[in-house]
Length: 74
Image (cartoon, rainbow, N blue to C red; front, side, top):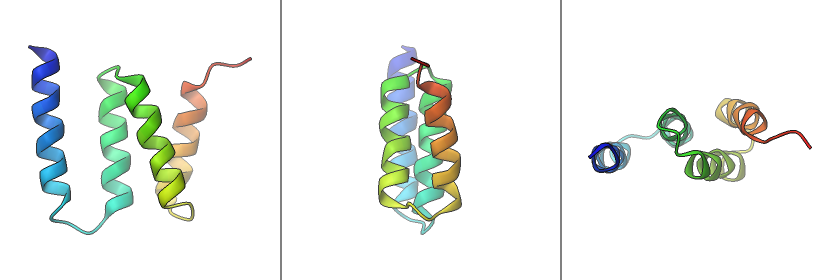
């Protein structure tokens, strides 16, 4: 049930994000949502997408910090 609700919410976020113009912010917010839902593989992927697609944005700085926090020290 929780997973279904998360998927519905994610689909709504995607639908709404298609209508606005601040893509780095929207992608970062989706990554943060996935992280809060403990969907860490998807959160990592989205943070990496922010960094790859928008490397000079302020959101990429936040994405780098969150990605570093999610990456276990070796």
